[in-house]
Image (tube, rainbow, N blue to C red; front, top):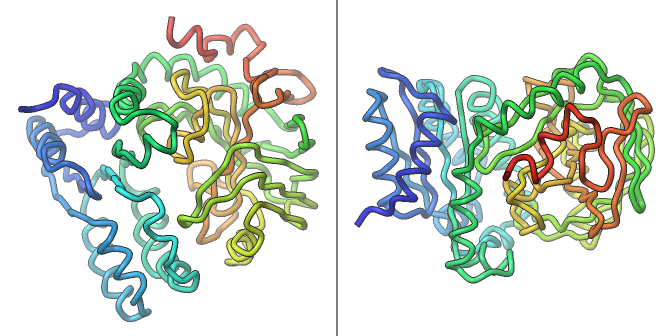
Length: 372
């Protein structure tokens, strides 16, 4: 029996996120998700006359390939994936995982080789700038455990978040986007954080369900060498299947000169991946009203209401500060009262305090306005 929640989510992905039209080709990349949902996506895409192409993936098989990866092997894989990605108009990536730490025991040099040979040329160089794309997680017991919920409660939460009214949210984002594009200086103040940077002349991009599901952020990038000061992230994070807590970064002229976390060895290995890894490629404000606390899944955590993320690594072409890297590590700072509070200033004007927007034109992005 078809789950009606599958139909609602597929409608969001096909009609709102990718806006598929007749004759357009869409790559559906399905990692460990129910075949019933993949079939629903195929049916929904075909119903508008689009041409669905499917790639079925498995995380355990992916892990085994990575553990035995060679440059030659990955170049063959990349050539195949580049050929496919280059021929589609849109991409839907649905990523499930029975074990979110499946790649923990893959050697760091293998992960770096994969990111260099496959992920960057396929996804950062083609998928991100050249297709209409959307990525999302699929709910699993491991995600429910991380969020501290039962499987049933988490699934209800997941489908509520992923099928919210993104058109309404998009309209409320417009004043924030306009304000960011008029702003030069940004200052972030929170416990352990005092950071300044410029976002002058860099576009601000609304994330309203067209790239990630769930969604709810406006992002830009700092002028590359403008970042000064220290930021202490208070949301736990998992990157390359490795957990970190209390990541703290100090910047001078845009470059990370000091870095600490609960896993120092891995932290510095990531930051030493290439020269761009010690510079920041994204600054974003999150405001999804249904996401309130971290669950160690960045597609959710970077949208937490009252949060920001400040991202070492590659900049997006749509908000480009020129930084290039094989990494893009979204790290989250919660600024609501329960997390210690905080303030955001644009050109010395307070725009958000303790997680709530204080300017009248931005109050439509506060949780009460988006859910009322």
